[in-house]
Length: 497
Image (cartoon, rainbow, N blue to C red; front, side, top):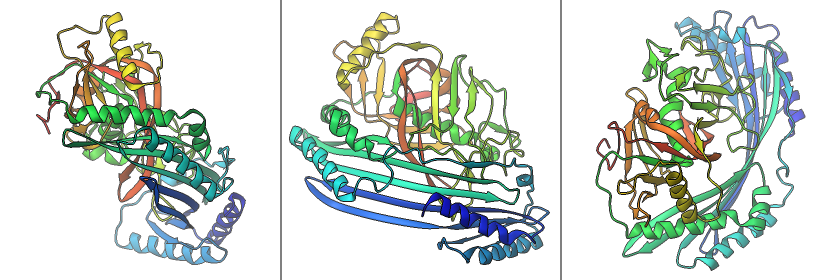
């Protein structure tokens, strides 16, 4: 369904609320997705999907709320939804639910954003997309036949419109696409896998890859690294000077820090006290900043919240000091932070929650790193740069952690446990490779250990963030690498795992 049609439907639903003395938010969404997966030269799956619907959230004049949804996005549905949501709100008020009138203070917003995609959804026929992905997959298998390869491509378009009783009407389109290669290699009776991606807004990622083969080169390099990891020794547990890549830095910023500053988490957060954000707390060295906000063309791009507010770019940590959190309209005041339009919802059938978009960890002190094509050439350049600036002492291990395999965080205690793809000792001129080890410790200790950045910003480490039964796109990064001093509260080897 087109953006203008959805906007007209939202206005028609709001028209049903004129006699209601409370407040109503109407969310409408239309979503389309094409995806495919190839394995060893054959299509395993090609799927197309579409869904759409309304979500109506009603508030009594005292602030009790009710929520009703329908997967039918059409004229005539709105009246029943409004009636049901109002009925639920009044019932909730009668049983003594928690009241919240914050939405009455929200500023009116009027916006109709154009689709930022270069190639709109459906412009490239599905059969042509299949041919392009097969070409890329076949080429990868031909240049690295020793691996077992899967290639997948996913393309999504979400059209949103949010209307409110105060006259707010916001509509926007979120396009995103990703091409991924996953490979498994075997060496010395062991197997190791690797996963690389190239993301963007639309099918342009396929045309770009066919022209420059950047992702293919990355996949081949990571496959060779994975093969070396198969026969690599294990590091002894300990506390080492570390260099983490931007993917692992995104994981640290997102999982270990970003969730801890979301406004609905303050009562369970190491960064909260008595339910309030601990603004002014020094959490890192001077020069370290953490920023969250939408970036045009990014996998997690979203210009407005699902409550119809502008999605602000927030400097969470500035110069090492905790400055702000990610506040949505309903929980920000209680958490002692301003509203930043952080509310995101998986779809029309969910109530928005405060969530990150693109979170990046930056350091004022940055050492230059010239871009090179291949992974191990880049690792050599890292070593040379660090030697040139007096950042390495040969004879002592200085470990570079490559890749991010996920992990777990306890936001209440600040403990984190992450996994990487493999490790390289850049203090040794032979650049020995080690098996991946658990990267664990305390959030604030890890931030305090960051002493510098290496290379320009890389913010396209993508993922899917789960919270409250909802999943949304997430992304972020840092400089290409972050430098971290050894710290007794940050370890490799699973001591705190």
